[in-house]
Image (tube, rainbow, N blue to C red; front, side, top):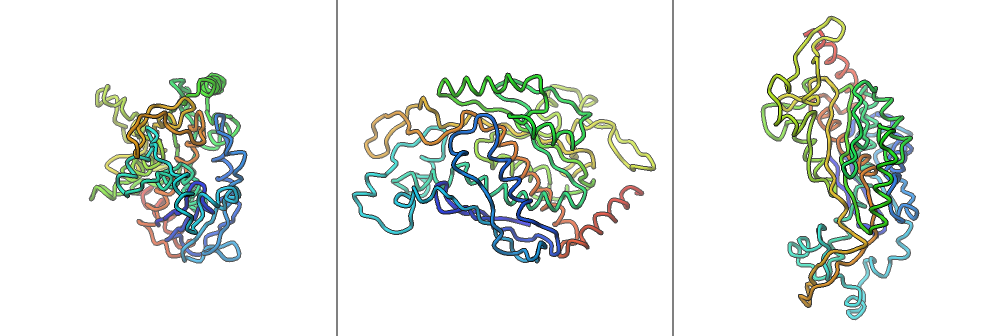
Length: 388
């Protein structure tokens, strides 16, 4: 499986094309739109979420509620494009109008300057429109298709917030994945710890009042992934490596860890590794899950636990200093639409990019032209490794 996205932040639409989804898999438009709606929620989101009502239209690859095995294309229309036709339209415009609308002041922390240097754009709107986190809506749409497939294979994925601005939610390993999903959906900041929910909201409100922004840590928890998915034989087939790359590819994400993560550097080996056990009902399993469901680039069959670090959004209402690329004079960086904190929404994005990597690993490893045969192959493999 693979996917591509296209579209600009204020353009006509976002487009996602997904290839490799097995044929004869049940898939409804609502499966995708529920995920898109979740991405738009969360305390700290800006005014644009009041404008956007993201819904995806399936334009190919699905017939009568079932996938065809051909590429699936999804379109998310931008209803606000009518206000941006003069700025973002594809037709040529007069040179004087173009100059008046040129963005020449790069914002610190964004792709503006690096993208202008790479592609030679004197108008950095050509960079910021595509590098915008708006593109993550298209990735959530792709991940929603993957999540639909995983769920039907007995694999559940849940994302939520572990930390905002240094306020840490206590971990509760006894929670089932259904409980995690229910609790996070009911929380304005998508946390599982009710005792810190208000503190997180207060920190977001204070950052907004100060014209500043704050970051945090999102976590994704996965149950049902069969052991041995991924591979140790090549670096690019290690599943944890693929997941790490997908998480860091999300706008503003700067770090990834599995299980204990960086804490493992401060512990002895006896406090890090997971002892192996066996019983007739479950087969092989680990007594603990400190390594977050991975050993040697492969899943262990334990829950996958991955965290992603999101920096504060760099667009500030008290802008940092920058330099105009035309005059070379210092200026306050330009202000675009901004959220004071997007960690709750980013946890939804992270959930979906992880889901896609899991689905890709499944389709890479098992016969996947037809969904019923894929499901049977997974069931047979689970029984095989239980009795191994």
